[in-house]
Length: 138
Ligand code: ZN
Image: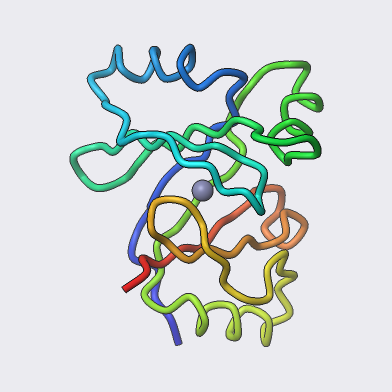
């Protein structure tokens, strides 16, 4: 069994990290820096809030990035791309959900940004939400 511990972050597709980040800074949030996750073809910027939830801005870092596709489908604009829930045991969560017939994008956890292991569930299984599950790397 596994437990959902809370909303970890909201992933927002952006056309430009600095330009979009400037908006979040108006709300008093500060970036913890940029990080490129090569195998996901994204560069991220995290803006933590005091309760631990974060805003994750994502820009495409290479051709064929899922962010590039999202922005294209969204008429050239950014927007909410995924929601991430923090879980206490990511491997157990994937095994449990798979056993319950939930369609997974990632059958195994992979390394994400921000020192976390992540896995995505398929939007068809979640009724339209691209859902990421994550767990900090110990
Ligand atoms: Zn994310």
